[in-house]
Length: 116
Image 1 (tube, rainbow, N blue to C red):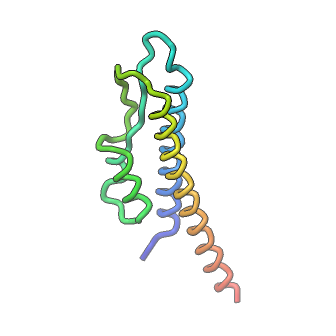
Image 2 (image 1 turned 90 degrees about the vertical axis):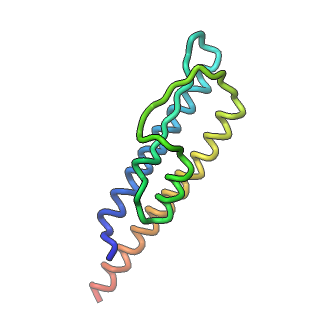
Image 3 (image 1 turned 30 degrees about the vertical axis):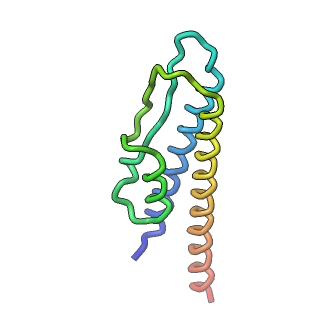
């Protein structure tokens, strides 16, 4: 049986991690011409590995192989690549918010059925 509290908590954690990645990507864009700035990215698939919901499985597949870490690299920052990654990240966030909405709808339905 699905524990709604646990599902909401996991979805909220995923949303927080996606938001943190968005901050790193936007920082890359803002600092792409800053001397000695190193590109940052956040990958958190290990955090989501072994989860059973379709959202978390898709997130784990999309976000890369390492756990929740901020990685830096010396690669040159390409605005088109950063914007593309931000768009993918925004889609993942939208999917997570749909998942949260669905969970809340299920909980409301259960409460309403219990009141009848």
